[in-house]
Length: 102
Image (cartoon, one colour):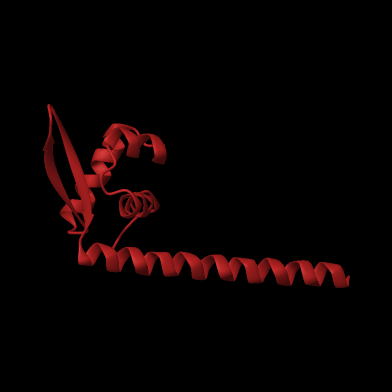
């Protein structure tokens, strides 16, 4: 599944705060509302999230739900991200060790 970094960050935020507003998502991720809406549409189109509309008083709110497919993809991407960071850490550690030996 082809997911970019922005979409991955959005998935992580949705997982933590499913009832967050679009304005809050936009602010916390540093996205414009247009970019956020584009990312949400792409994730919904790929079957990674569902968007439920809820009527509360006079304003409309959405709840963002990761589908089972979305949870699986997010978990795999998280594992890949962590493995990459561990590899970078090991390489830096080796580099520092070698420079200290010189």
